[in-house]
Image (cartoon, rainbow, N blue to C red; front, side, top):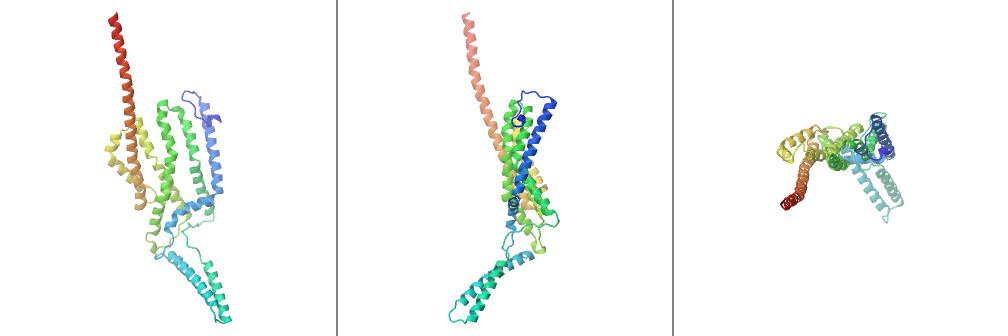
Length: 339
């Protein structure tokens, strides 16, 4: 179990059985951590589902829409306001001086009924996905909980994977791999946050309100959560573009000049990838293209800065070595002259 807590050194030599034992130990750690995260997320499944439903707020029922469901919701809210006004007017009538006892009693009863009717009217809120199957509430909830647990346990899972493959890296390769591996969870979390606050609300608002006057739009929970989770995971993975670019440039497979020269091909590949991703609508496509282009350009800039830093360090080392060589040459020449 100790091997699961620390990476094995590059100089260590393990047998096949020891490698398999290490792999088994790390897999057990990953499973235990994931199951613990599942238990925690299942305990808080109501909060997780509320968080997942929040992007639907921008597609809430709005006044002036031709969607029959939205018109019904708007009518209910108008009725609620009328009941509240009727209650206020009835109470003012009951307090009017000179009114008979019968009129006051009738006004009090009208105010009571108006208050009851206003309280019975549903509150204005965003859409919520619907379920159609008998077991769909449980299966959909458990699927969302599993993905949330995977996201929560991701740092530990990545560390276990990194610690298992680390011995294969030389010290030089480890200097390149370690910073990149540390960037993986942060970039993945940044991609998920960007998708949650920007991509999902705009995509859902566009898709749910598109031509909505011709449909009674009911959003099934299974399809909504599948779409949302897919977008979140895909954006988290796409935010790993800087790691790939920095890796190939630091290793020397591709230069930054080559990446700049082939920028137009990269833009074409990004556009095709965004078109094939979930949504297939212009809003989702553009929402995914823009951050990818920014990440691509930012990665090239970062790789260029790292290359310049490496060149300066190399030039400094050469400058420190040259005087030593020249001094050594003068000493040898002086010794020869004394001889």
